[in-house]
Image (tube, rainbow, N blue to C red):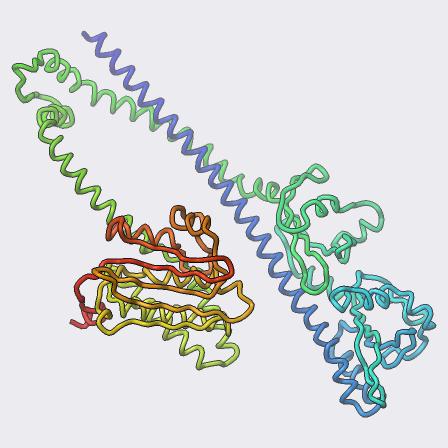
Length: 586
């Protein structure tokens, strides 16, 4: 008997120990993988944010140069003499350390106005220079060159980036003539912007133009000496975005972004795996200490638990051997553990519990249905709030306080309904007030894009409706219909009673949809709109209606391509209810 007991305890103890070791191993592995993923993701996000910040800085700088170029024709037209024009150019040049020269040339290469009046090269040499030629042929109307030695003034060789464009000038007779504007920028000004950005321990940024010529590179000296070569072929394959690649026996992470107006591309290079090793060293030390400790704890636990469990199990075994279904009586185990005694008692109550469990299943299905409705109701995407607040910030920057007040009031009215979680049903008047606030906000965001009208009969204002039912349909009309129109669109919302039902009609003058799309958006959720709105799609609205009112109710779509779309929402007409805001007051 003792041999048998020893065998059970050994098997049970070994099993518990194996489970503890397995759990320890897989938890350690899972935590390690999770940690690696989080650290790598953090490094990637950090690199992306750095490139984004650099892009903003370069865009701001380039925009300043373009604004200076745009101001030149006005300076000329408002000046009374050539001396005044040149003086204005010198004021601009002297106010900025980055501008080397501002000149205007005729199409034959002769200098008309500018700060480079001495020792200029001959016109026939000037017209051959790339900045002069590309200004006349570049698609954007202006051209940013790669860094080059400016061949404008004799015996003066400055590394610059040239901005050039063709402008129109009127002579004293009012006749318009084309001319080429040149603004030379110190290359060091671009270099300093990029050098202010750092990517990790070993990462770096560089610029290339649309022909993959290097505009700036921190290792330019090594490149010129032939001691370093950048991985341009990989950039040609990926064009934009982010990717991993192996180059010079190192795995590196690359992000490619663009600089507005220039055709330049920003390339950020980082080495996450090298930095991961540095971060992982202390983590690996901690893991190497924890694994032996946890294993030892598992051994002790297996011995204690197996001994505690196997002793009462032997007692239960004796009782089970004597079990007879015809003479079955409740098991009364003596001198045993609470767990084994509870097991015996549970066995005698199994039949009673089965009936109770069946009742619980029915109740659980009701709770599941309610939870599903609440989940669909609560599926609100924060991007609508983000975009609305972003619009409010824009109006604030423009000091448009009228629009700010209107948008904040509309947003407040929307959330007054949205956050009333204890009220699944609200009045039609409250629901349409919520929709009106939503449309008011969208009108501010999409200026002059659409108008809307709402018609609600007086006798239907207090009728109940599921909260947040109409707004997703209106949102669909905006993002999948009205938004793609060239001319302003119209959204009409009408409520009417039809027999014992209420019909809410949402019509738009948008682009419409074909029959296949109409069927699919009611049967699948793959046509959910983009991230700009609330996040509740037509599919989910239709599902909420059917879950609440039954299969005979739901949404009907009437639409043709280029002829707009009409959504008919059918719900039963219930008894009048008290509005939520008045219930709160009571």
